[in-house]
Image (cartoon, rainbow, N blue to C red; front, side, top):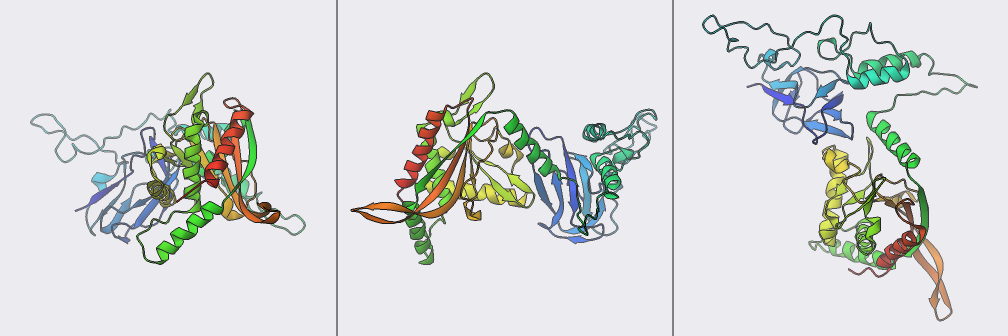
Length: 404
């Protein structure tokens, strides 16, 4: 029995998705869990897995097509099964039943598509906007979307082809290539630019003694090696735990700045920056302040894995889903940086590399102590420098008194 592959609904605000890549072709054998295609919303990118075993009988949309949610994108079944009744592009005439003048049973469940008047150009709003911004005339263009509708892919392809002839340039024997930005990259660029343009951001830097964290981490590693049923709690998990404790003492940093008011949250919904092959994603761990360390560690791993798999809920990627964000670049050896706030949040903590530094050990003895860099960026419209500094000092304090 043929089964429709339907474009899933990702969140309450998503109306269309763009198919970015097909992993299977018509006629290919597929099994439950095989990757069928990748798609993007206006928030993130995802992978879609086959819902059934069988043969991929028909694909109704090409790569780059903008597809309404809950629309059939393909059919899986057995060789020889008909697929026409699943095709969302199909235009049918309404055959009447001579007894009741109603559509015949064979076509009652088909989607009836009315052809647009010749004078009307069928183009998606996004494609129209891109064409307008680029000064491109699309009036004589036949699109690749349903019924010749012009979609984003068509406009971007024309712009890309037009530029490609001038893209490979030789300058003193050096060649370079260019490629258009992915939708996710465009969204990241837009959000970062908007954040810097629409807020008063300032960054304070401080270091914290992480000997207690390192001791706890070594203890956890030893217990795992000994075969004990131990959650693999990382240094980043511990730091997130410490930040949550600090936010509870300084709730003014746990909020959203909304131009004419500040919304302060009673619970911490922690945003965590996750690097994925598709680009940076910042999912929220809701109600993180209600969790113990083990639960927090598990939830942080779940959202990170979901982001990399492309199965994270778009609702968790909304900038309003989190109340404060942490971005950890310590594994890359970064000693200091200025993270950009995910508006309307009022702050973000950058976690840096651990550096051994000379320190007074007492009794006129000096030695090297591991310090971790902390970079707090805050919106000066919402928080003054004094409270921001005290909040950062409290994060340091929570790290230095940590116990496990």
